[in-house]
Length: 160
Image 1 (cartoon, one colour):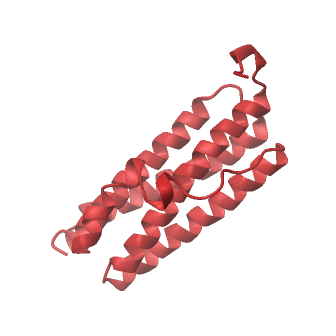
Image 2 (image 1 turned 45 degrees about the vertical axis):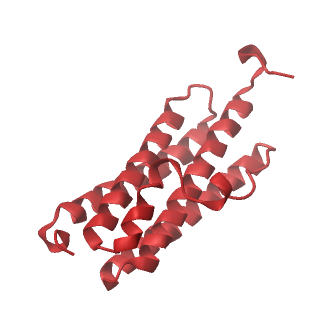
């Protein structure tokens, strides 16, 4: 049975939005962990591992919200376990493990994550608690994007 727009409840809309964010969040978590595993500079290992951990926390919060709304979080990972969407370019950067290339691809992946959160926030039929959770996470995603961009643009990582 296909649901018409009039048959979709606010909870249904929130569940769809949350599930999309969970999939995007898994990409980000995996992307940051792969970058942390490959980069050679200790300060970037720490940064990327911190962001991977942050995304894991986000995923747990999103999954808990899905359960609260009587839904089931999507199982498994995206694209048969491989990164996709905004994080695909990271695979090429991983081959060189150059700091600047990894930062550039993490920045691009974060831009995708920020777009996913912005799209979620633009959805009007989402309950207040879900919107607050999304807004809080969006602000942290945007801060991570800005920090990664700042590092990528810095002279410190221009030739590494």
